[in-house]
Image (tube, rainbow, N blue to C red):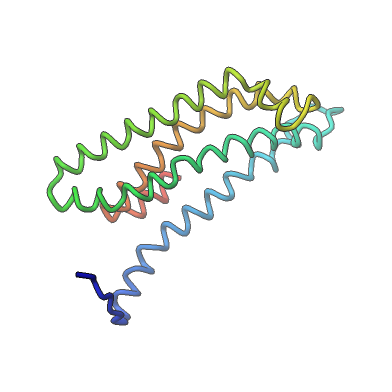
Length: 173
């Protein structure tokens, strides 16, 4: 048997969804600003005589790589949301158990990425960008520790959304 979806417009439902979506939209926009503010501030933090374009270019090359790792966790954080909803319907204990397993899984994915990338950051930078970006490898080795933290953040954000705590998601950004 197949489920036949029906469309029933409901203005009150749309208002509720829009109300719940505003904090998420705000957190998304704030996240975009936070992802770029470092590149805006960096030239102002450099000592005189240092070419800001070169420094920002080195830094930008590492942020592009570090942020791409986030693509690993996004499908998982999206996929875990419906089971979290179902577990919450069963009670707090099933929800907490599933959330705990999801957080452990996030660390199992994120920590090896950070450790491995840290160890081979020089090889990664040389391979992808060439020897002129050799000096950016220490930046990548430090910046990649953002990955396990962001993996946890994605799963915790999904759990807050399940609890209808979208405002907390915005505050957490």
